[in-house]
Structure formats: C-alpha cells, structure tokens
Length: 390
Image 1 (tube, rainbow, N blue to C red):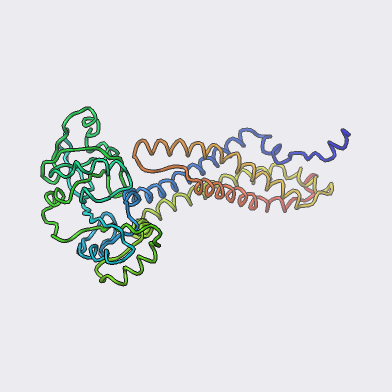
Image 2 (image 1 turned 90 degrees about the vertical axis):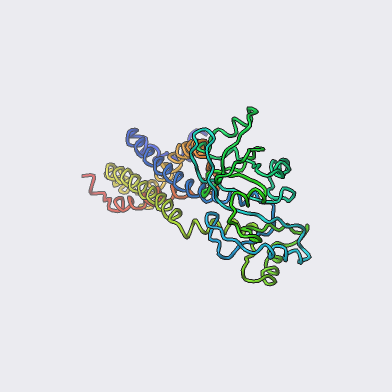
C-alpha cells in the first residue's frame, strides 16, 4: 500500500526549484506584486474617475433625459428651450417631467473667504429630482428664496459647512456674489468635473445667474409610466421633437458623459498606458528570474533528458513555475490594492473600489505576464543537451 502511494505521488519539482533560493523567490514575488499594484492603481484611477464623472447622473430620478445637442459634457452644458420638455408630455408614456438648471458658480468659504467653483442645480422644489430621499425630504426648505442644500461630501476646501450646520449654527455665505443660507445637507459626492454640489430652487438659481435666458434649461428629466420601454420611447420622442434637443435614456446619458472623458481627454490613454507599463515591468522581472533559474539548472535539465524525460515535461516544469509565481505574487498585490483604494476613497472622495471585473482582469494580466515570461525562458531550456553534464 505504501509503495502504491509513493508511486502516484508527484514530486513538486517546480516549487522546489523556486524555493531553493529564497532570496531570488522573494525578489520575484516583490516584482510581480509591484507590477500588480501598479496595474491595480492605474486601472482603479481610470475607472474611478470615469465613475466619478457620473456621480450626479446616476442619482437623477428619470427614465429619459433631454439635453441640448451642443452640450459636450457636465462641464460644458448648453441650454435648450424648456418648451421641448413640455412638448414631451404629449407622449402617452410620459408620467411626469422636471426641468433642471445646471451650471457652475463661485462658492465663498465661510471661514477663509476664498472662492471655489461649485456645481449648482436648480429645480422646482415640488418636482422629483434625485432618487436620494434626503433631497425629497428637504426640498420644501428651498421654497424660500436664498436657501440651498449643501452636499456634505464636497471637498473640504468649501469649508466646515456640514460641521457647523450639524452643530446648530446658521451657515450663511456668498454664492456668485449673492447671500445664501444653507437650509439642509445632502450626500451626493463630488464628481470628476465638480468638487462640490449645491441644490436650490429655480428662483434662487436665476438670482445667482441672472443672465440665464428665460425659458431655457440645461436638462429635462422625464419619468415614464410603469412598464414603458425607455429605449423605444426615446426613439419615438426623438422623432417627434425638433433637432434642437437630444433624447437619451438614463443609461445613454451616463455613457455619453463617460465617452467624453474617454475620447475627448487623455485620461483613459494615460492610465491605460500606465497599466501597460506595469505589465511590461512585471514581464521583464519574471523573465529574468525564470531565465536565470533555467540557466542555473541547465545541467540538471540535461541529465533528466538523458534519463528519458521528454522536453515537453521539462517545459511544463517551467510553466508551473510561472503559474506559481503568478498566484503567489497576486495575493499581496490584491491586498495592497484594497488598502490603497480605501486610502484614496478617504482622501479624495473618489468612488474607487475593488470591482470583481478589475480584480479578474489584473489577475489575468499577471497570469499572462508570468506564463508569457516562462515561455520566453523555455527557449534556453530547448537548448539543453545531455552533453552539457560533462
């Protein structure tokens, strides 16, 4: 029985070759982990910035969104006639609408008195704006002119507004040169285009931006009857309305914003290039480690070939070394990525998290990196000759 057990037990040759020199193994794992961390950070920043660019977009309580065809992104919004939104009510699938003003104004820090650009949204307090219940519960506070809801997740450069408001203080400051009072707090979160947000009524918005044309809005939110197909209604409505307005489903509206940052800026290219550089660095490190291992043990490999082992079996040993390096090196890279993502979220408020798709992508890249390097190192093994042992 004992003989049969040892007969079928395989010698972990790949692991023994790697662990024979612990220092070299640690250097290899450190290099692979560093490459993995670099890929995690670059891809995480890229996806996080794309997600951050649509923080507000995702919260809109709408099935369809009307927008000017001249609008390029959230940082370059153009107005369109509000009557187009009113005309959309003629469609039987429309349940309700909300006209929205969207623009950037200067917010004065109530303590330092320094100004900073903040995104202002204006709507009718009785209309639905966000799926976030905090807005609906406090929207009645905006009926009084000069009142705003401040986003407590805004960057700290806007001042300790949330702290003072929660302490019971009256928080007043200047926005676009006009005196306003913070009537409540909401939790929306900064986006890539805006460091902070405030919500107010259309009346207050027009007082902050008196040059806003009457009858012009930047966004039109449309809510449909239950059971309606947003894509079909959007196509039908686009054919019915004039060409000075575009009709998007909510998902199309989100993708429109992301596409701007992907294609019209260098963000996507820069971070993708950074991830590619991490991949190349990892390939070089793993190749050097495996090539050195094959070179150091070339006489042993030649001896095994002389004993009757096929070249394919020995190549499999090198491939398993690459697989082991990939698996072991990925674990600390994943753990470090989780920690760094948490640090970024706390420091910058960007929505950077370990998405399963990104974790799988990085693992795949690490696996290809290690196995590809192993294949290159195998060329040296193919040169092994039994005569090398003499």
